[in-house]
Amino acid sequence: SIPVGFFGGIGSASRKGILVKGSNFLEALNDLKYIVVDKTGTLTKGKFELNEIKPANGFQEAQLLESAAYAEAYSTHPIADSIRERYDQTIQKDRITAVNEIPGHGIEAEISGERVLAGNARLMERFSIDYTKAQDSGTLVYVAVNETYMGHLLISDTIKEDSAEGIKKLKKSGIEHIIMLTGDSKKIGEDVAEKLGITEVYTELLPHEKVDALEDILSRKEKNERVAFVGDGINDTPVLARSDIGIAMGGLGSDAAIEAADVVIMDDKIPKIASALKVAKNTRGIVW
Ligand code: ADP
Ligand code: MG
Image 1 (spheres, rainbow, N blue to C red):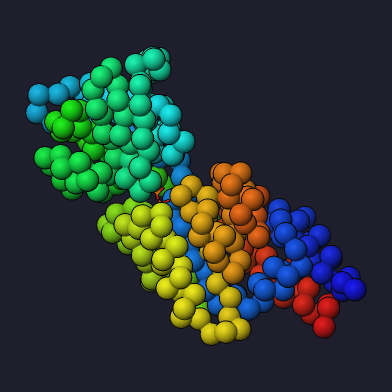
Image 2 (cartoon, helix red, strand yellow):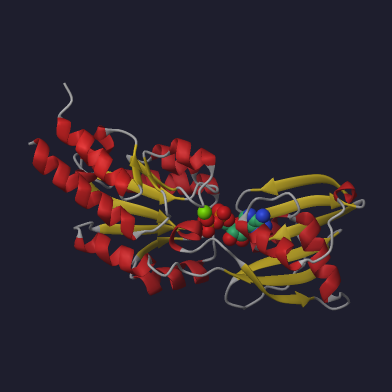
């Protein structure tokens, strides 16, 4: 028979907006020693804003923005939303004849017979584009058309108001290792981590390298310790599935993330993870 206390625990978690998909996960939260957190959409709002449009010599701002908006026309990445939001004209979708979204890099698209690239430095390097590395602090989207560099866009995300408080609470709850993973640059990754009091960071990870990073962390733990991964599901669903306890953001998160997760935080707030730990602890108290 299943101890009644477990049902009570799941119920009380759900009243706090925390969906726990089984008493075994609630129990496992008591052995949590590692919390691995994705940056974009989890610690940050995942809502980007386009701050600057910087065309290269010979190009106009409007041209650069248009190429980027067309390339990003079909992408669901929050970076793409910010670019489309700024472009105030209708995108004529019949001009877009091919789109290839390369995870952790950006977009390769065919627009009116021209090849447009929009993405990070890694994308430019992959296609051997002779581009100018920008020094701005923020997420950079470089754009090239038919192998010619057009310039870059500067985009920024903001840290959620309660992320710092959430991390503090997790440390107070006895979580010894809080580790951030991101596909974003070393500069941004380390900057966000520092602002949140996170001392261990893996940056510039491709989606499959996030799984490798998690494997690395899993190999460090003791047998009775558990590792949770917290993410929004954009490029990190495999990591959610591989962790001992996958925690997804339910508001911003994708359906795939919610499906792959063991615990869902309905309002996307990091302090709720500490609340879940508290419920787990109290529940164990009742059961034993
Ligand atoms: P994170 O790990 O921060 O959640 P992602 O794995 O989603 O980030 O993406 C990593 C990086 O790949 C982004 O910071 C961006 O530079 C680039 N990128 C991914 N998708 C796109 C896109 N649609 N347009 C432009 N750049 C992109
Ligand atoms: Mg992400």
